[in-house]
Length: 340
Image: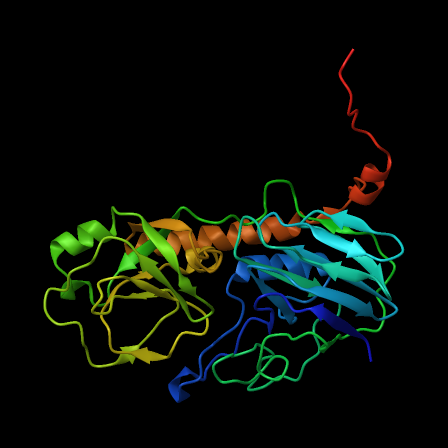
């Protein structure tokens, strides 16, 4: 069996794919990639079909030893590079694939520029599908690797023993997904349960992501939002990106592992085009909200889809040599003495 041997698991590394759908009426969350855009790009770089399972990395990444003849891997998420240790150590920029062989150790350090990244491997992560998906639902716990995050000593099964001998690929310059400053929202479905002052505050103030941020959602801290009446409602369905405001008056953006129903008023919903951007937010990040009507949100969704398709179509063979930091340091290129 080909696998990745986990030397260091990272803070919260899980197996994710596009998610499991059609089961929310039974109380089963969709799960799936927090940042679908970065996940899709990583799979494309690795030469996988769009739905292949990959490793989702949160905040700090793993160290993984390759136990396969060869593999093609790609990291997308912020501007964190991929470090390959072994007989030929090298550093690979984000947004590009690289061929690794048995004994190489793939390392991802603390993430920069995003709180979420994806490591895709040619052939995908070969864990069993549960309810139609390989995604990990941590609160279940089921799916992924035994329904949990990776641990040291795990062997993550791969879908291929070896990788084809083909050129490495790279994203076009300037197309790596970015951490957002603003999330666009459609007000509602219970915006009428807030005072007009609360709506204006929500759309003008900056909110900071607290340390209570995970795959279920992110709690924000900022100016308090006042309910017009009570803050309990009859539980109803929760869409991706729904923003609940409990009695504390502090908003919560609900993400991939959100509960399927809830009883707090929802002041707004993050539009589908910005869901991936919301998944890139982490503790300490600041974000503002801007309101759109439904028609404008649909236009943004179509434009977002076209832009992603255009980026996928422009993925090209990587023709520029990779930066080998180990070799650069060994050449003593920096003069330590005074300039003459």
